[in-house]
Amino acid sequence: MATGLFETFTLAEVQEIQAKAKSLLMEGKTIMNYSDSGTNVGKQFAMPIREVLEECNHALRKLDPETYGTAKRSRSARIDYRYNSHL
Image (tube, rainbow, N blue to C red):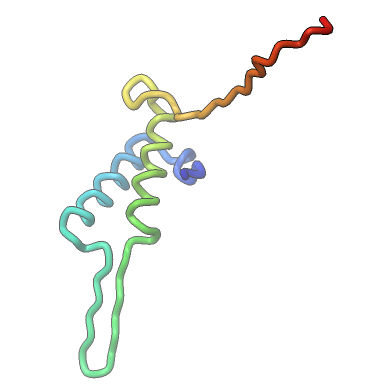
C-alpha cells in the first residue's frame, strides 16, 4: 500500500522515477551483483520495484487526477436490516 512517499515530488520527477523503475524491471536489472577476486559489489534500486511503482501511481493520481484518475479509497458500510418492532 502506498504511503505518499513521492507526493512532494514534481509530476516530471515522479514520471522519471516511474520510467526508470519500469526500465529496470523490463531489463531484469532490479538487482545487480558483481564479484571479482574476493570483492563483491551489489547495486539495486533504493526500494523494491513493486513499491516504487505503487508509490509512483499514488503520487501521479494525487498530482494529476485528471490524467491518472483519483486516489483510490475504500469505503464500507454496515446496514442492519433486522426489523425493530418496538419503534
